[in-house]
Image (cartoon, rainbow, N blue to C red; front, side, top):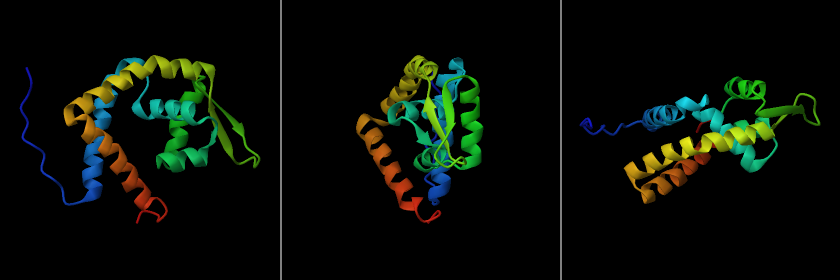
Length: 150
């Protein structure tokens, strides 16, 4: 049995609209990943490091628009689990992160759950709208990236 919902009203604020959508999507991905022992941000980091290879913490933070404190809190449990490793960069203050073989195995194990969440959202909003959403969100992030917000 499905519950009927009244459509959500558009909000006049981009920030509130994006945060509402982000919370709703995160809840859906959380539900799908619940049995894996990993949350969506942790999976994103494993996926990101698998795709792009070793990166500095600053590079990861910039590309994912995550502040240093939040990123450190998210990376540390992954390191303790043995899924990622950290080493000092050329400047000893720099931390460089990379995926371990165990991390790649965990990413592969969790990927079907993440893909199910992706497929569910894509199915609900349509493939074309889903693809457009990803593109438009990248445009929005880029528009405010180098301006300290705007």
